[in-house]
Image (cartoon, rainbow over all chains, first blue to last red; front, top):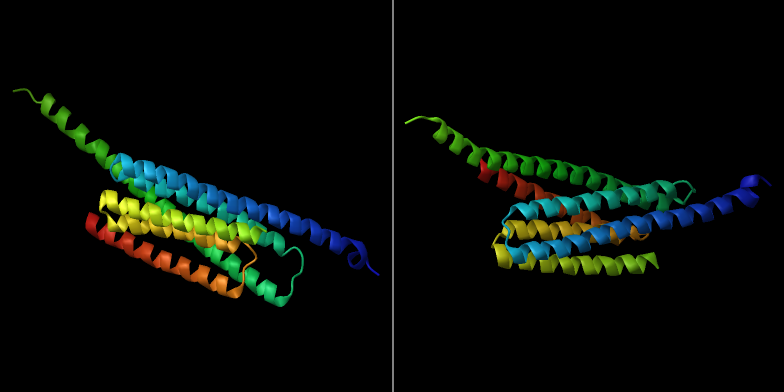
Length: 141
Length: 85
């Protein structure tokens, strides 16, 4: 009888299972809290009618919450592979991990694009009013 | 336990997304923006569905939701870029 058969593996399975649940619950909580915060802020912005800019920023914030939650869920997936599951469980785990990794990549890409768009909009907004007054005031009659 | 809670949370997030999209559409008259917001909330709901140890149909549904979301999101971005040019 080896150590893994008698004592070690069962204890390890219990510890990993608790850890997986904790990390997974943390990821789900982050996603849910992010969605609730986004919901409240979207409604506030929609009823205040502040234009289009705040919507882009709020979508960005929601995307960041989703990415953070995904990172936790991926960590839980990696922890799950610490104890050897059967082939069906392993296939499901691989599928979930693949979906999460792909989504993480695409969300990251979207966040980058949105950030650049907001920066470009800001730069354009700053350049337009600033360019006119100095040009007109500097010229002598 | 986690499965039931995350399924309820996913339902709440889905309902929230529908409300936000409807309010946004009513206030701004921007269908594209409302659709983008709806898809953001649906993605959050799909991720919450995947939080519990999932079954094959749940996995397929989540993958399909996320694929549709990505497709629509790409199309929206392309349309916006074409309008900006």
